Image (tube, rainbow, N blue to C red; front, top):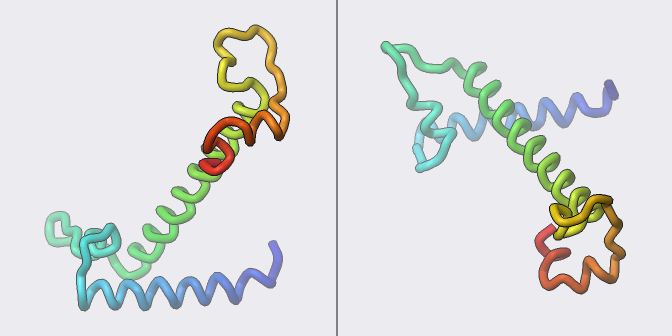
Length: 107
């Protein structure tokens, strides 16, 4: 692990703690406010539990999105849009990819 990342982690930690403080004072219609006010049999999440949950949701959401987009683009480049009708994969050239209306913009 690179030691250069530690200041960024602490800065992000301070940012999230500040955001939790603001959402406690002025709740919004968002997930963080819902987590702050969630209660089960009188128990609420502690500050550290909230911080861990928000961090986990952020990282998990980012990872799945990045992997899903990457896998989708790889499938398009390797198999092409009509892969179900082909028995062998083919590669799409850059000119073919850009010729498909809006495909490159969406990726």
